[in-house]
Image (cartoon, rainbow, N blue to C red; front, side, top):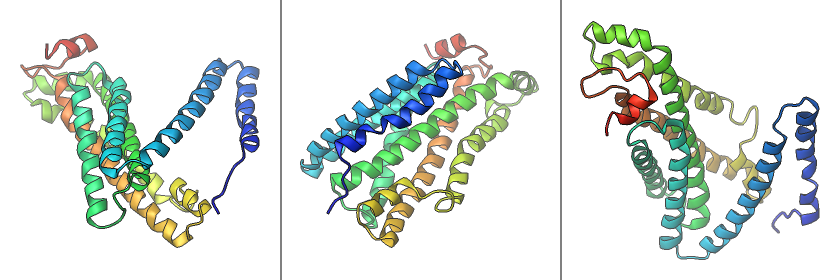
Amino acid sequence: MEPEISNQSLFFLIIFVIVPLALSYYYQLGVSKNVIWSTVRGTVQLFAIGYILTFLFDLPARYGIPFMLTVMIIIATFHARQKGKDLPYVGFILFGGLLAIEVGVLSLWLLFDMIQFRPSEVIPMSGMVIGNSMTAMGLALERMKTEFKENNGRLLASLSLGAEPKQASHLIVQNTLHASLIPNVDRLKTIGLVQLPGMMTGLILGGVSPVMAIKYQLVISLSIFSSVSLSAMFITLCMYRYFFNKNKQLLQTDEEIRSSRS
């Protein structure tokens, strides 16, 4: 028998919203509207995706899986792009990177018989990989822009001494990758100790044995670790060069970056 939460019980989740809402109002944080809007939007989105997944799960795998993965990658590209919208071609590069990583991870899952090519398995697990890769790429873009602004003087000095853009940017690339990867490394180190991961918890609640739930959790956790690492490296190594023009000069404003490839 599947575990079930009644609609009446679900209604009382509003308590978890009232607490931060009250604190926001009391301390005049100015985020009350955002709390309400985010709660309503998230609830609607989750129910909507629930009905969509129910429909997709009934479709043949060769139709439902490519359709949903394409939608996921497009949406992830749009959101990650906001972190580097001034950079040329960032949307195309993000889409290509997310697509390549998802295809690679999914191919390994299927090749080594970790999951079956069924919508109920591929879509939820791929969603976790795409979502975490999107976050890693967004963080990398944001950190890289900050690093270029903060190290403007050092970069100009390196270039004036004859350094190539790749050499001048080495420390920035290193710092960006470090900042993007450390949270994921820390999360992997404490997995199962500080908290039981979401997928494992869901499977146990669904009646799967703890040992089998751990196996699935290892598959997704290590897949996410790899995809996040590759995502951060890919977007950083692809995009740092767009902070320089064709004459290997540093572009110091967003306007210069936007017009550099026009």
